[in-house]
Amino acid sequence: MDRAVLDKRMRSITKSERWHLEHPGEPSPIYETTPKVNAGGIEVYYFDWRNTVKRNFIGMIKETRFATVPPHVNSNMELDFVYDGTCELEIDGKRVILQRGDAILIDTEAVRSSPVPKAENDIVIALTFERDFFDSVFLSRLPGGGILTTFLFEAIANRRRSMHYITIEAEHTGNLFELLMLLTNEYMFPNIYTPNMLEHYATLVFIELIRGLYYQSQITGRASRIDDGTARVLDYIEHHYKECTLTSTAEEFGYSPNYLSNMLKAKTGETFSQIKLGQQLSEAAYLLLNTERSIESIAKKVGISNQTFFYKKFSTAYGMTPKKYRETMRV
Image (cartoon, rainbow, N blue to C red; front, side, top):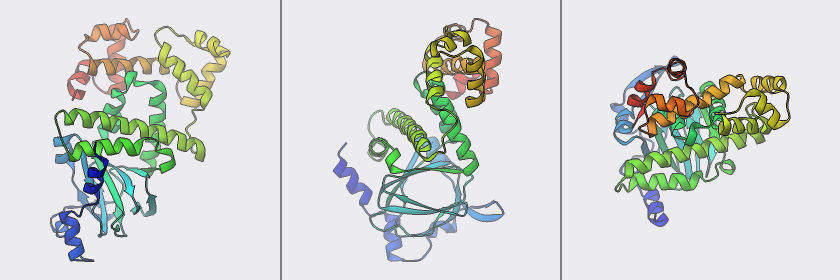
């Protein structure tokens, strides 16, 4: 990746930006044909990214500078990243100011606008994607679909559903800048295997987001109930789920079985058996998507010998049979 070439592309004046420079203060003609919907009792614009996402797996744009953006909702989830400068948004009536390196994840239900025009050096990358990618497919792409990551993800997802957006400050974004640059470069300058590269870069971006959100929540006091002690237990179950029991896991950490059972229930909301089963099913989902193993062999590999039990629990957890999951969720 030639960073200088990418930077030049990011800072170049687009056709839309040229129009706004020539017509300061005027709304874009595109709004004349943009549909409107009712959101929370008010009429807002509806930005439809579905065809773009369907064609390219993800959609990406550099947000238009020199213009305000009226209240709207998106057809898909959106991740905004401030490449340079600042960005001011209004989301569900709340003012949000982002600085260079900050990121914000915005759900489809959020009514958002840009009341202040971006200046020349205010450069924001907007990445849009299907909610299913973030909520399900993304997790199944993780190596082994780890328990700890799943619990962290669910805590973050619950916050997102209640607030409709989550911000990640630059100091907690880790390698997000570099990963997004790789993703942006691949999207803007497509080459052989670009669809595969985009999928894997996007997965890494969201892994980095989850890690950043976890550390940010620990510092700000908005953490999930998963402390370091619980995290170590979950990590142990993740790597020993085939053979570990409540008793053996308790012994490993010097707890009584009753204490460990109560701790896990209090911290995660699930019993030891539920956590272990969740790891088995998550591993099974990963194998269904990434191997050609038979469903019976996958069940046995994750430590479930009763096929009826496996089908029942998998269908309950994923809303479809293992066979249907393999057929539906494979890219």
